Image 1 (cartoon, rainbow, N blue to C red):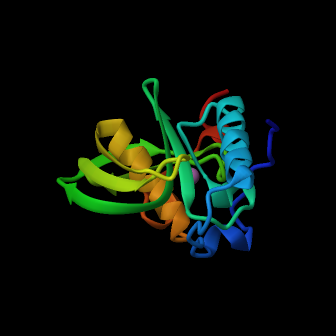
Image 2 (cartoon, rainbow, N blue to C red):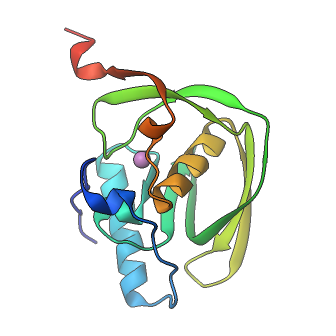
Length: 155
Ligand code: CO
């Protein structure tokens, strides 16, 4: 496994629609493993492949010890709304309040190529929605209100 550099806002890759994964192979495993290591090293709760420079439809999320890896994810259903503050490893130091679904059902493939589905509420719903948006070239700052720069908050 290896740490990868996180692509920062301003890089075009974060604005492109990521491509379907057509074959799950050793390269995909390696990218997923590197994404996990990179997310952990940066204390993130989620990371999408475009954030490490890979324009493929896959992301990882880790909320409360539940690790989810999804390849070619599709949102099946959303319910309700919640407004919470969130950030993004590609926009370090900033936070903003985003309207997200209160609950989300999502399916996709796991690394074995099996179809899996997850249902999440609260923080997990936020993370799944946020990471899915990355695959569409959407950043949370597109939707956020009250964006603040935490670099200027505390002294
Ligand atoms: Co993000």
